[in-house]
Image (cartoon, rainbow, N blue to C red; front, top):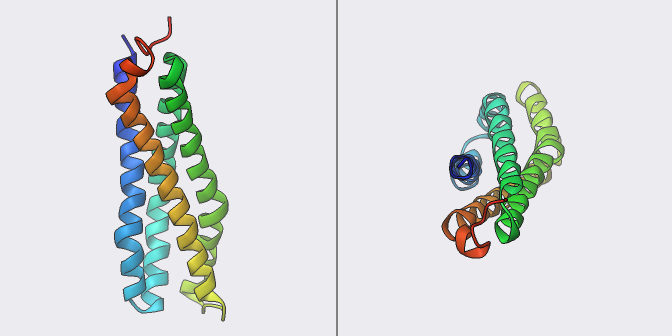
Length: 160
């Protein structure tokens, strides 16, 4: 009954999240490296200002839909959905406590100057971005597995 639309929504939201993080990892990070620092800092600040609301909303939708799917299923599908939800929560925590504080530093550098250790700080931002990209991608893959094989993994895959 409601499992199919929730499954579809979880697939969509985790897929969009993984895609957004992946696009950033593959394209944006390399573009940042190719431009002068002042351009990078200005663009990074502008991009993060827009991304804040979009990515938080996307993470919230992915968490809610994954955990709702975990409640609506049983056996292996429940574990897959709960795992996906936990991974999205991890992406959020990494973003909030890893990337966001560095974004604040970069915002200051855009209007002043970067400290001597700016390269190490930027590498740390990129490392945190890799972590949240991987957790987002694995969350999406778990929902894909649940969607494709869910019925076979947990009999009907839905709670009674």
